[in-house]
Length: 211
Image 1 (cartoon, helix red, strand yellow):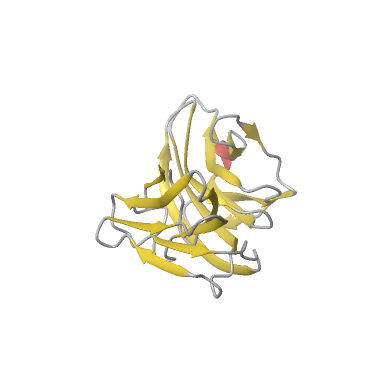
Image 2 (image 1 turned 45 degrees about the vertical axis):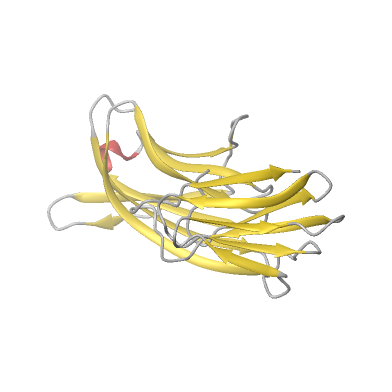
């Protein structure tokens, strides 16, 4: 699964059925696995932003996926030539298996001027209401390619890690935490904030080893 920067995903496992939980990070981005005896609080926030220039092919979309917890907020701004702006649509798709397209809580125009030609911009905001994987991108409904820029600002809700019972890092490939018997255990997988959408997101594999 792809997590994204400043990501924090909760996993619940029962030690009656599971002996240990293992996380593998093939990209070696430094993903961390924390273990808890009680469910941690989703009480912290982390802010990050990115800006990228891209070419969106005709009748196609371009963007990226990441994991977001309930209460996270996203602000998206995209800019291109005035003549093609209305043929670009921001898309926010929720779900890994069952897809759902979300509507922004607000959109507006934000006009800027270039010395050579006018450039217009649009903005959209989203509030996340459920923990899930989300795809953020732009859809080009123009029969021609469009050159544009997209800025994304994310306020990501994070779990409080201060009461973690143990922790391991995947900086060298993989790590594993055992479950003490016979309780339900909580695990949080986190990613560093120095990973950005224009680089490679950590691709994380999670394995539950049965008894």
